[in-house]
Length: 455
Image 1 (spheres, one colour):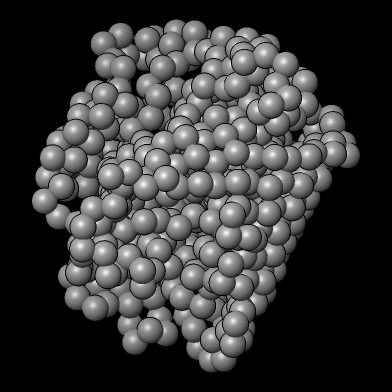
Image 2: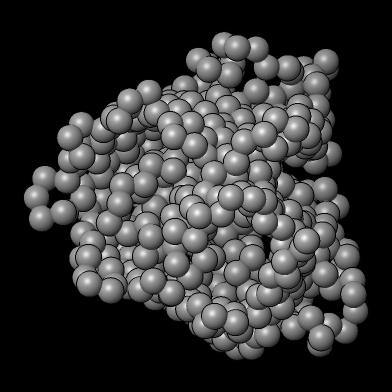
């Protein structure tokens, strides 16, 4: 994080001489209307707004939002075990999504932008602690029994962004994914956020290069530390990953790309580690073909070049672009072999590590997110999705079914999100079963959002 903070300060000084662009994520009601029908090789996407294009001076705002919500726990058969600086299993990471989706309390921060080229925001999003949510249930901010129910893993979306002509870069904390499928194999938006610096450059209208540096928590649990020290007594407490991707677009009907994710841990990186190959990492490739009737055919392949374990995926989808709405149907199949992410050496595990601090009940937990496929290794998953989007909202249903290293898996997610001008209305149903654990909720929420212009 120190490395990211240093870069943040340096680039802030440079960026003030330029201009910015706001990002759209899946938590924005307009996201799917903007994204569907386009070939997006990177997530999040940039927001295309006519209003921002005419601004000729800096606009500064104070942002505040408050969640009013109701939750019905239909099934509650998952317990998040307490612990101090312990690592997690894949099913604990998957069930944590319920906290991230439903545990929001309020947000506060600042936004700054200049036209369509420069955008910056620092927003602290307060939500329930992970152990609090699973132990005591869901709460609104005004019904909190104690202030210690608030978790300390924030912010999740704060960044500086610059975009102009063929060049763009981002720095800060945000989700990130590269590729054409829902759960990309090399780098996907599984984690709530990445501490990252990334840039993109278009060499021509059909050749594009992407680079990202991901900085993560280098700390180890006691058992991991003992194992790592037995392997290398002089290891340095550093852990970073570097993504490189080259994309080629042939006549808007065929898209191909190659990529690498090189992890450097326990030592300082060098140019070879960053751009070519490290001690451990992933090489990947993809192809997207749109042969007729706007039907999209996708395929991906990836290999862990240290363990030689591989993964592959394919998908088919079609988007119907109507006058004032868009509708998409899609199916994807994923196969990820054992040891694709994991390794006997702790610093060779290909997981993005974050730390979540809960005060009631007290816990300090390392959540380890696979860099690529969401459900981890030793996985065989079928995924079906249906999306209906209009300009101010969407309805989305995703059904994932199969197996992973923890056992049988079945996930159903239905989300309705609409912008009502003074806030967002959200309705969601989420059911997840993995092995013997099951959790199911139905939620209603109204999120009031206000931006106060500063002079």
